[in-house]
Image (cartoon, rainbow, N blue to C red; front, side, top):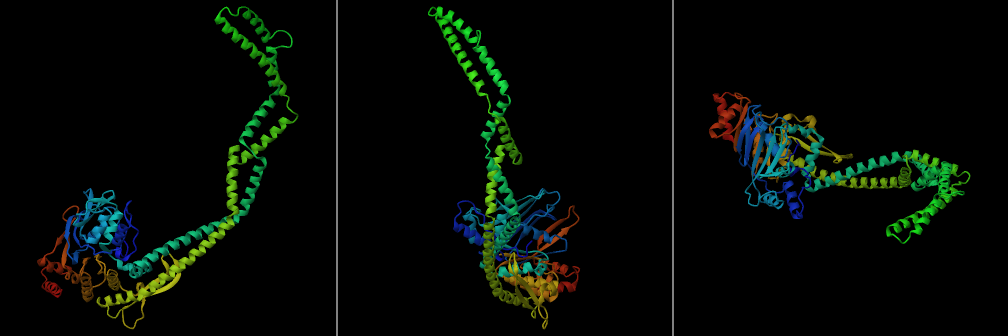
Length: 593
């Protein structure tokens, strides 16, 4: 979970809108995701079969709402329910044993700006009067999200909910010790234009890293370039010298087969020709002539015989022609001296080439084509290297310019944020605290070329030092609360704090409670707390109770009426219900509220 889970204080991704959505609608959704509207109050929260909670319904109110209960009673389950509405990841095993699914539903008042934008992108009916966000979690961990009964992607739920709720989870004050979290908070305080500039820087930084990797690859290849180019030149010269072709190879193999068998071919042709027209005696043609004489004598008598006679005459003519052609073929088989040796030599050269480059002349030709392309690439490698160096230098320069603008924005806003935090710390019983924000230049990194360090001095006369080294747990909690108050000035989102009071007590607890109540003026704050000083200031108080007599154990949520407040505060004070002093103290807390 991030330190700040709110569209009002962090950069947001571009909305995913369907085809045909106009630019005006796009701007409306972008404004929603940045929290630029009067966020609706969370009026109801329904939870079913989520861990210990079988069924719970909370009717929340504007102002400060507190949830209290014994450790382990299930208060954090409600925080997880809200996180699910924010599109958070569903942890394994959160479905109550025996149930098929868990269900979380939040009902919000619907601001006009939000309604207009959601209707424009067809995520909400025009007659909707409230906004209902819901999430179902199955036993196998799969989830389904819905918006006013319509199925939607979890990311869509997250986009809408981000402008409605800002969630600060348990122990998140510890994250303030992280440099990355401090940088995020300062950047968020610089405003949306600064965050857009940072997004530009991130894109440029990614481009620089990509160009550096590409240039490294080009330099590595340059080392082997000459060797590869020499080999390619040799292989291509060998192929181009032979000028192989598939048609020539087929012709050469046919000629070789004929020359290897010339005697058998000649003998066969001469023998067949002699059988047709022998030099001595009567061959096939003579016999055909004798037969033709008898047929000629009977010509003109029977039409059927005349047809047969015509076929006989054709056969005699074909026999004469065939004999002539067989003798001509036999005479051409006289090969020139050394012709077979030349063919064998040419085929051997082609076979050697084929074995080197794929096993066939077709593969040789394909390799030659690829080799020419690769040769051109290698020949242009120097040009590519120079171009890559130029592009990298340009990207580094552009990144540096944006980094300087980011630094200027951070330096300008750091004193303002520090002053606003100091003012709030005064109201949190840290009147003498010194709070400063130090911005120092560094080598370009993912989010800029700066380091941000929050510095604090809790006591007068003590120099300020890094927050992570000096602040106690209670001081961290108060610094975080001050920062969150500043970050959410002007935002209408419901603020949810899960045990923001860690490590504090006494008068400090009262000051933290009053700060939470001040935050709740004109907006809604939900606070899970162990401190009676904070609980006594609530506009509405919910008690979380666990019943271990059932299996599995069951957690219930109860809205406390006026008569229930004193007993709950007594319990939070760690006293027995009949402790007179504790009851008096509880009443004094309520009276002072």
